[in-house]
Image 1 (cartoon, rainbow, N blue to C red):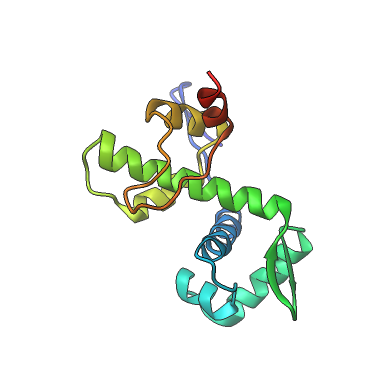
Image 2 (cartoon, one colour):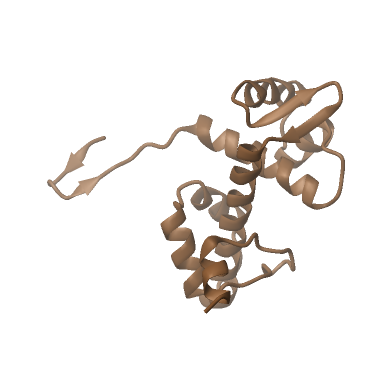
Length: 153
């Protein structure tokens, strides 16, 4: 972490954390579509080779984010929460770009930003966008705590 002019702080994120989040998001999305989670499907979705998927699934299994065995791949509660959060972030960013900013949705930009959003930012964005339930691609946006408290008012 470097400080420039005593006011700007630069952060270097970890690619490892982003890779973990992308795998969990991919598994979450495959399950959302009602499909079996297969190594080949994950590999195709993330544009990686199948041995890379197997290696990451073993790592995610050791971190208790998925259960991975001969029976298949299943998200643990923690893995489910991270996957859902990542999908919520990306879909809210798509709504922001499409509806509020009126710019073309840039999936590469969405993917770059979604990893750096914390809960406070995501809930504030969701509230600003009036708690949308669908993204521009007509997929459901996972409900956050801010949505639950807004609907009970």
